[in-house]
Length: 299
Image (cartoon, rainbow, N blue to C red; front, side):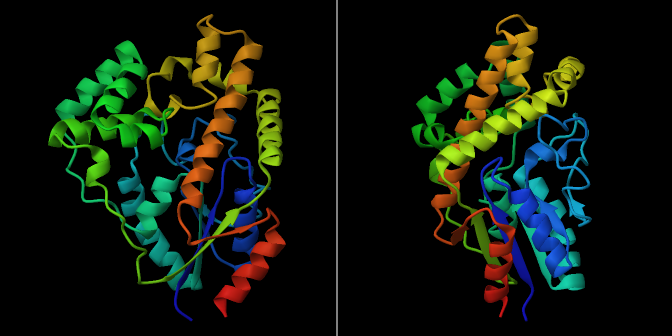
């Protein structure tokens, strides 16, 4: 049997982490996390980091391994995860890749577009504008330079916005025109399974998860991270809304409501990314069905 990578995708709060851990335990293998929000040690509650019990005793890679000062890109993830993937495949024959960050999944299983190397000087100027004026002016400039990228980009992710602008400004061409449609790598068999559940159920899960995070101490966690708010890792849903609350812009109830709304928006973008690729098989969030399907595909 050729080495096989089982890729588990899905929007936030859909149950993909539990499904991946269940598959990992069933096949006696390890899980590689491609969820960029869970890379950082200090961000536990706000990223719904799974507990040891939820990981089912299965070894997981790239959970909480970065400091807040650390910066990772999809390319860095792919280059760092590659030797881990090869080791797991050599040891077990099957590896599990799980995440909702489409760019990170694609970077490992398809490779990256040959875009120009970054300009430190240009990136620093854009980051200075971000710190001074916020994300809105950068998004406006991106809309002028590259409407296609502006319409599909994660607008709550300053790193991606800055990278797209950096490419536009450095090359004089829209970022979207320089992207290709890379194909799956051929050195392993790749099986994609995505979480499929009704939109109203997904949104109910998101609301419940946010309420649970608040009950578990999200507000105190965010307050403790307030001195580090300028780091890219904390310019994300769950923290930015609470920072605005601490600044007096929002009541706590308003901040929590916005966290739920922005998380639903993020989940919708994740689903859009999944459905653009016909290679995904959508199954209900039932790990038993995932195991059955994977076993059939592995025959």
